[in-house]
Length: 336
Image (cartoon, rainbow, N blue to C red; front, side, top):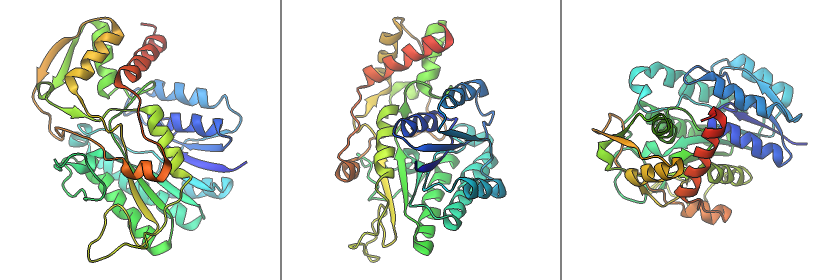
């Protein structure tokens, strides 16, 4: 049985990735410190479900603890790493910027060093659509670059991509970054829009809608994100033989380095998203219109041509179906 290390295993995306990999026959080593950024009880519930599988090994370690991460690598010798652990959230980064540097920069350096000193066939890591920042040329393409992030969260993820390229170049480690677009679905984080909107609607409380609803988001269902991650992980990054330093392609390199978008590639207006939640809940929302928040962008829309070309897969879950799946989970989990 092959072994894979998944960081952020108690998190929203990490939990789902672990479940899929266990179903696919991997021995999964799940690393997570179960930080208190949001309700640890939700994280503990995810981990409890993972522990039901005898091929799951839990490791409660902080990414910044290099010695502990190296010891874990030495004990389990994973063939592959999927790095999903991070300090998430755009707005929180305005208040607690050091948390982002610690987890997302120092923590990622630990993972890069672990891959350098303990051979792995592929290191896949989570980036974000937030790196596109002020780019308004839709759909957003990894081949155009992303040099104007508007939050520290996005900046740390952009830093991850640059750090990854340097390690791919220096040490020939296959490294692939995945820019996720507005992930949603069952077991989502409480600070995410779908969770907050559903909770407010079911409680009869106002739903705060930023920029008066004049926003577009490429909402991507969790199962589609997981499918993209797993398929890309099976395809280690390779050097692009046509890469040219005089006209550098930001998504590829002369080193074994790649960047992909994973998104539904069908942007939805925020108000239409609220409509879908209302329908799934069977209750109209009390809408409270709010201004645009610092760090937010007006629109996201993923160009997924590379994902389709490399894997034959395209995310396609309809928002109505994904939102209903979340609301059904929420009602069940919280007994609403």
